[in-house]
Length: 456
Image 1 (cartoon, helix red, strand yellow):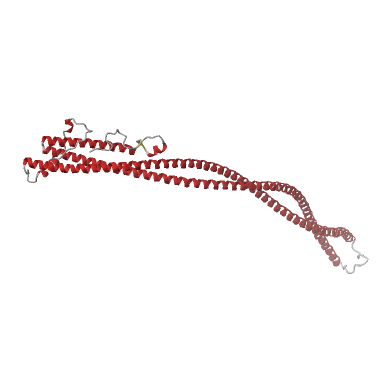
Image 2 (cartoon, one colour):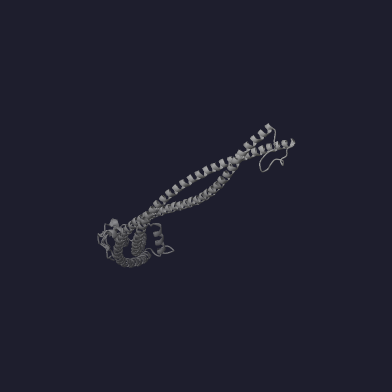
């Protein structure tokens, strides 16, 4: 028997550099060992160990044939069989591990391809977002220019409003002068009211004079009654000439004095009453005109106050509109700054994504290359494993022939043996003594020799 990789130094099992992960292999292009190549080296070492054990087995079989010790030969055979079974299990585990590693690498390659596709899609999305942001920025520029033009129009309108406000203030000053004149007119009306009150007092005095006149007339009537009591009637007095009947001297004098006293106040009373009536009529006319003028001025003042209030409201509204426009301009400036910053950030992110996409593409290419090399290594390992399985099958056949030869030898040497036969005894011995070692190492043979044993 021989092995394809027997005698090769460690690390020459057909694999590449070992000891680095796939991500490190992608990021570093220098040739280094991979995990798969380390596994191949371990597999080569295991195969060398298997060849050494096979040589020991051949040496043990030669020693069994030389010394004719059936129990020890059966024990050594069982030990070698268990060792072969262990080696087969280890080889099967290594094969499963290699298959899992290959599957993991394939999955990693697929994930890298999916990441590359996602990065390309993200790059397209970022490009769309960038162009959309550029369009929005252009639209904001247009809106900003329109807002600036509108601000200019509003500024011109504000200048006009200020001029109009100055004009209205001048008119308000005129209205203030008018109010002053109205106050003066009210003061005049108040003076006229005082004059009317004085006229009322004069009227009261006239009424008092009339009452005194009536009292004097009553006194005159009493005097006439006294004259009648004296036998002189009023009809006997001359009506046209104004002559009176002769009276006693004292009474006639008193009567003349009383008539003179009453005639002058009566004439004054009549004249004063006429003047008072004329003055009252004039005062009533003046009062009516003053009330009418006062009402007109009051309505004019109310209209002026309403127009002034409307003007103030309009100016306040314009000032609020100017404030809102200034706030809108400030917000537009802030929005423009934010959009520029976002555009710069999106550009940087797009550049970063482009670099990431290029790195992922390079990583994908390296992964594809590594996957192809690992597939080739796996195929070579599968071929080697198949050859090893064939060798193991050959060893199993040799073991069966050896067991048959030993049983035949024992039968010829010692007879039929136990009731169950020599094969059953050999199985019991191999089951009871699994820890007994061979004597191949004590024989001093090399571990790299290959023995061929003939079955007796």
